[in-house]
Structure formats: structure tokens, C-alpha cells
Length: 307
Image (cartoon, rainbow, N blue to C red; front, side, top):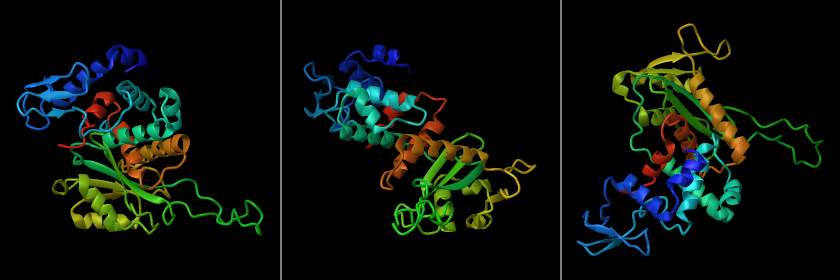
């Protein structure tokens, strides 16, 4: 959707409410309290509906990312439009400048949109050939004695990169058949411990149907050793020799996703805390999985967080 199409579609707040009601309820609104269809919209407050059966008042935005927000709905729609049109997202400061709100409001709006992006109905979609890999997120490693006054600047030994680093490990997988990606933080406590085989298996079991004897492609990391014992067909590629073997065993798709994720983190967001890191990962998974779909309507559909 272009900006001009957005203006034509939503000239007034009532148009936004009517559009959202159709997304959430279908042909006609339903009372959130009793389920009755005998409801009507108030003329003096288009975001409020009254039920003729139970005589309760309700809002179609109750239980959604828009609940308890006093920000104009037109600003919300423009924020979603901008966020989705940026391949790697937008920063809170940029949104603040664009729609004229405080930074705190802009930051919360983006977090709520990411919350909707991760609110998928069904994550169990991996049942064919799956590539699995892990990466580490948390900024570029700094020199270990960079701030030591007694040591010349730039002569530190350097923090470890990759496995064994203090960054947060993220495990991701791509289904070769439907081109879907799924990624999860392996250690939400951020203690910097080593990534274990049990953590890898727990994340894989969230989305993989083991009874189908999936083919799993990984690198040489020993944490993937239990795959064979768990009835998976396990194929490995040795990255010290090649990126892919003659049989098509590789992890290039998931590594391509990591590249996009890290370019977004480093180039747009610069730093993300572990408390909200999963939401940022969900954002990039959503973009990857729905790149050929109508992401705007899907975000509105997934904005309902209850019921």
C-alpha cells in the first residue's frame, strides 16, 4: 500500500473504525460481552458500540494492541504503513518526527506493532526439509581493556565472537518447502552460558512434526548430535570446507535471514535489550514469512491479543 492509497482508504477516523471492525468481526460487529449482533455505533464517539441485548458498552479495540491508547487512529495506521514499508523497520525517533508524538509514545507504538507481528495463530508449519542454525545478537564485541587507562587504546585482546560469546544466542530454522522461518531466543535470562543440545531440541519441537521424520540440515556444531536419536534425518555441512555439498546440503537460507536481521539491528535499532529482543526477532520473522502477502491487513488481524 502506498501513502496515497492509505489517505484514500482512511480519510476519517470513522473509516478506520469501520475497516477494523470488518477485519476483526467480519460482516458485522459482535458484542464483546454477550456475543449479540444487535449492536450499534455511537455517532458522537465512533470507537464505542452499545449492545441492545445486554445493554453493555464495548470497544472493538478492547483486547488489542490499540487498547488504552489515546493516539489518533490515523497516526496508528500511518505508523503501521511506515513500519511495514521499511524493509528493516524504522526507529522510534523517526516515527516521532513523522507523526508528531513523544518518543515514549512512538516507542510504545512500535513495540505494540511488533507484538501483533508475533501473534501468529499456528507456528507448527515445518514438516519437510529444515535448515537450522544459530546466531548471536547483542552488538559488536568491544576490546576487553578498551577503557583501561593504563593500556594503549585499541590494543585489547578483544571479546570472543560466535559460540562462547556473552551475546544472546538465537536459534532459527527455515523450511525449504514453504520458505517459512522461525526463530527464538535460546536463553532469555542472558547469562551468557553455552548453548545446549536440549535448548536446540526444545525450540525445534515447537514447530516441527517429529512423526514425519524431517530432514534437518545443520553445520558441524555438536549441539545438533541428538537429532538422529530423536528420529530426524540429520545432514551436516562442514563450513570449513564449503558452504554447500554436492547433495544440496547447506544452511544458506537461514544464514541469509540472519544477515537481514543483523543489518536491521545494527543499521536501524543499533541496540536492543534482551527484555524485548524476541519482539524484534518476531518482527523480522513476520517480514520474511509474509513478504508476498498483504502485511498491513495481517497486522490488523493479529492485533487482537485476547479471545
